[in-house]
Length: 376
Image (cartoon, rainbow, N blue to C red; front, side):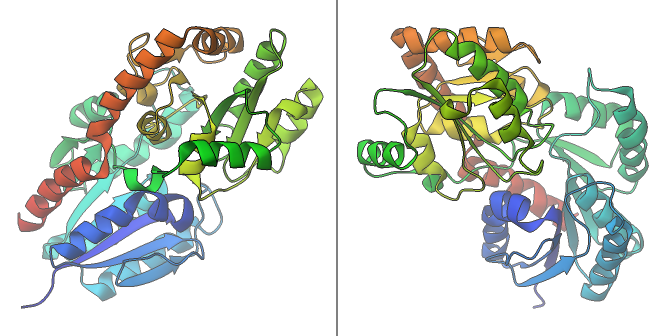
């Protein structure tokens, strides 16, 4: 019997497919499906049967974007896939262009948006730029998966694919964050990064971009250092801004209390070294990094956006801070440093919160949805 085939389409490999979708690929293969991946970037994707490297990049608007769309279309038509499972604005558009002709022959097109670029409170240009694209392609999509309530409501009301689902993110592999001897790792890493044993370490694991908004955390750190000098801010993630945040930290005079680590694979150890997770992004579909921090036993202080608000109940399992309010951000961090009982409560509530976002639970949701869509 011929194996059913799935083409997973995304924008980039390293920062998307490898980071988020390996468990899904493994799950689909365990069901007997052949799974191919088409994405930008040169990284090798583990687990998949075949990988196709596309010309486009993570940027939505790029000279190679159209070329990548056409490449995806050729790959999909040649591969005769039973399902195209596509992700993010770029990969989602590429996948649905590729599925236009194939849907007539029974190929199912399933799209996961990971947080629309248009949302309540965003700039008008976002609605004018991204909403029409989603509105158009929603009509040529069998199912759209949403990871927060706001996106789900917009999809049901306005985009109108055949079916809409609300899922608990895309899952995370908690084993990736397990560390055997946390105290030993904590001491080792603090020594490596020249951070005193008794200091408080704030951490944000995210690519350095305007949207992730690490500038807010640098402004927060400036406020904190007015009160105490034993607090260190650790920022780990690929720098897409060419050192702009490092330069800003220097201008603020806080470089000695900030560590820029670049892309790291040892995320569990970095969390073991740290005390509080701080998350500053302007827009998030969900905010998986704060779920991961909760699993690792860190309390969370995060900016107010639809993704963070899906996870955090302000004052119960974390703090939510209005965008741009570095002073309030600093005050909440200082409150957690001094109030041990509050910190412990956030840690406990956060750990309970993260469970439903673990890969095992989300994969069960995805398994039910994708197999049902495949059989329709």
